[in-house]
Length: 293
Length: 324
Image (cartoon, rainbow over all chains, first blue to last red; front, top):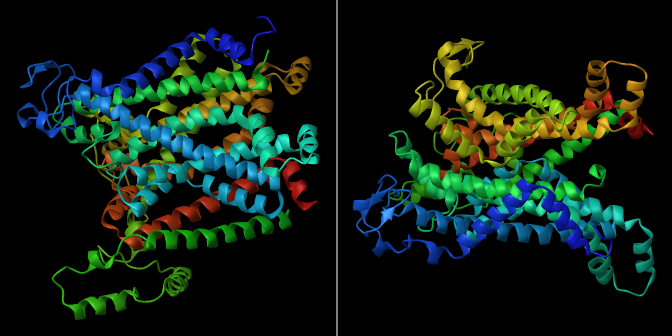
């Protein structure tokens, strides 16, 4: 590898060496596209009640329904085509995962860098709060907050953010604390640059690598947490089912052998989460100087 | 050492106090409990009487102090729904949950650490790669989904294990235990596996990461140069060096497994505390919610306290750093 190449190129060259991670990345992008173009690729719009017929409900994979096309993965209790429901569910799950991930990233990073930069009482206050929260399981926190705020997309994202921002705050704090002591920050502080500029332009960019790793993992976690909450009946309203809700809907029918309603949305959910985690793992390994040859 | 213990103890007390305020305010900000307790056809007089009897007409801070006063006397209030003392309600369900959680966490730790050390010791063998692949799966796959698949495979299709409930129990010291009867044991296997899988993956990763880093250090190099056998190095040096993060996680996981048991208990209809809390949230039974959260917080704080003490025992640097 030539030394003139950009850091991004070098990063990609190293990433490419791990075939599993490349496959995972492809899968991840593919699922993102499926979610984005759900309305184009789905045989049916599962939210349009006029399209649904209860005659078609709970049919096994391969059943040709009243719509005249084959339900490749069968239908759910409401008579939705499961494949379409999965594409739309994927869209909602990814939407919520990304939204929760980015909001937590922003809030957490802000708090973490603020604490590391300012020090003193503010540092103690913020980090104590973060540590307190980290010692509490995220699922429980999310559960209580959803119960408190009620159901809905915004409430759910709020609960996920409240449960997860602390991870970002801790990571940003750790990285910023280490950078804070270095000479270039001292030099920047000595110039007449404003505090905000030093934090944004100098401190933040040097804290990004660990934050990217945490972000990938946390987006996967948000998706999984959302699915869990939906499964427990505390997630989104039934009219726009996420993957977790689809799985939950199918659960009562599983005992009687109608496995497909729960199993296929679950498979989609797992492929998505596993793909994100594998990519995240590879990125973390590449950022970890202790594993460098 | 005594100073260290006192300092940590004071910290724990402060955290507990803060936690109780947050939980109390958080939970009591939800909805209006009066609508649940009083039927809609009740007269205005009954309504006002009930509100007064439950103390809901007083300002929030007064309710809090009454709550704390009662709490310190071991009284956590009565459930709005079941109308029995909350402590009795939770206490009756606790053994089932504890049994499940302890079996899961202990087996996950023992198996996970062994597998993780192996995977870190021989990172390139096919077995290590398989272990890591399984651990990624255990880490990524949502716990409730694993539960569903376990039920589908072992209960519905193969019919080897029951899909839910606790099975026969034996009463020892006035508490019912499942794992002492064959039937109870067959009921506990699936939920325990379900609950343990995530912890297992975590333990494998922790042990592997620690092993990989420590195998490259001078400690191991010198131990080898001194002619110690590999088994001795692993047992005496490596295990000790990787144990700090593992002990921390073991402790924290005990607590978080208790929380995660909510999901497993719901899937397997395991009659523990987790199922109780889900039911309570859906009907907004506040005393139960508050009591549960306070108990979990108490448990967490206690566990953290114990972990700190264990650290100080293992690692003299922490002990001396604190007293200096």
